[in-house]
Image (cartoon, rainbow, N blue to C red; front, side):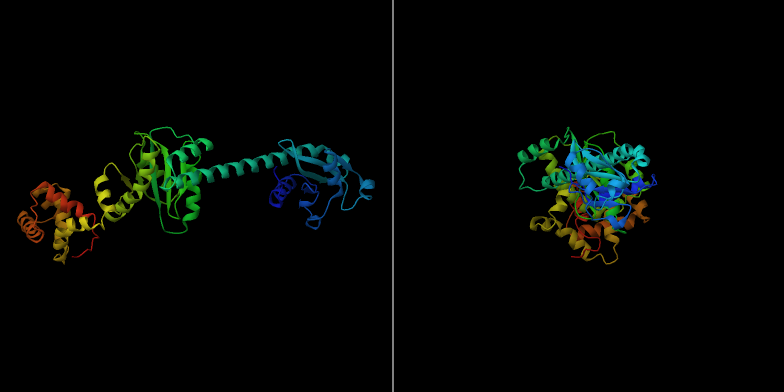
Length: 371
């Protein structure tokens, strides 16, 4: 059964007294005044409220009757109900003939505020449960069968296909207010699930739509000052197993995107699948051997021109003329630099697989990496 607390009781008092020129008291299920427009009456026992609680009916007290009771002033005292349960008493101070016309209206308003508080608490609990479910999805120790059962118990609407999104928030200023606004906005629809992962990340599970315009969504997020710095997106997902794998991979995608394309705000797994896979294994011994030719080049690249040339060469798919134009150099200068890169690395840049080795390798090393 719901128990009135002093915060809710005082809220009821303040709302009612903003309209009525009479003192309002709210008593709990033991008849103690826990909310009042008269601070001196707080935390005292109200005998009139005890009569209401004992008889479950309205009790009117005039001046003569009040003189016979302790802690009581003239007024009308009404039972306060929630879901047909008696949870407290509402009192209006004043001669009964004067305050009686307001009594039922004030009680109705009070019970509406109680109901609103209960709904808020239920929504908070539901959101907390959904957040816990999403975080459990990231835990390999949690079985998929158990997660499916829990989703059914919580009434989660997991229609397929779905898409996992990882949002990175700006680290400027306090992220918690922005995070709270995002949680409220994204979690407002029953088919959307969202959970914070630390102070600067949010995991968002939503129905997949090929027609969705995430560039426009980012623009809207900027207008609302949500502080979204980057959005990483999975492929369409068909079941819980894929949902889990995508949730784990998106952190690698986000880390790769931040390292390789720090200015990009949208990262699609479908576009960056292979480099994301390599980035996640960048400390692996085998991969370090694969990166050795590139490291030899960068070790001799004190001015950064060889790396710049490689970036442009790979970006223009080995097209010499467009690459030279992009770099603002003569084709002979480009040819000399490419020969130098080939000499240092031992690779042939005219061969696609070896050019790919250098192209992908650039995304796995820090911009100032040396041999």
